[in-house]
Length: 64
Image: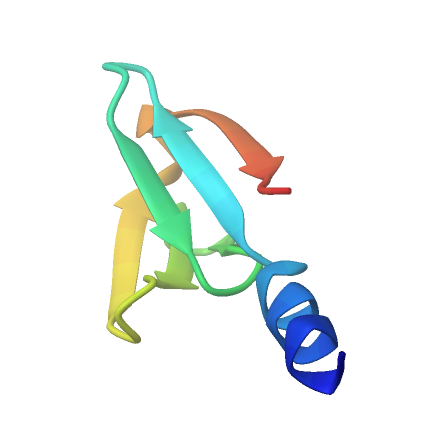
C-alpha cells in the first residue's frame, strides 16, 4: 500500500505543456514562467531542465 501511495504522490505534480503546433512535453513539476525572459522553465520526465517560449505554449494542464 505504501509503494502505491508513493507512486501516486509522485505523479500528482506532473504537467503536460501543449504547444500551438501540437507538440507535448511531460514535466516532473509545474512549469514556472520567467516574466523577464518570456520562457517557461521546467524539468522533463527524465530530470533534464528545459525551457519553452511562452508564445509557443497553447496550454498547460495537470496530468492525472
